[in-house]
Amino acid sequence: MLSWALTFFIIAIVAAVLGFGGIAGAATGIAKIIFFVFLVLLVVSLIANAVRGKGPKI
Image (cartoon, rainbow, N blue to C red; front, side, top):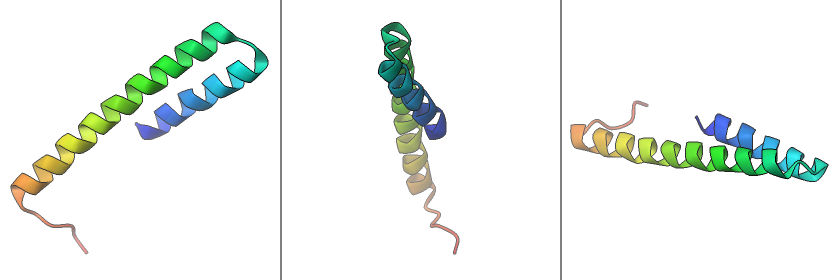
């Protein structure tokens, strides 16, 4: 999911450089939403792992 956010961020940068303001703004908004969803899922995953009490496998 983080790769999707990075992809949309790169699309936004390229669109902004080429002068497509509307596309750049939309891609930036999508990238922000996907990034925050990623962060929420990461936190939920870390909490669930801590509650189960399982450590990382080595």
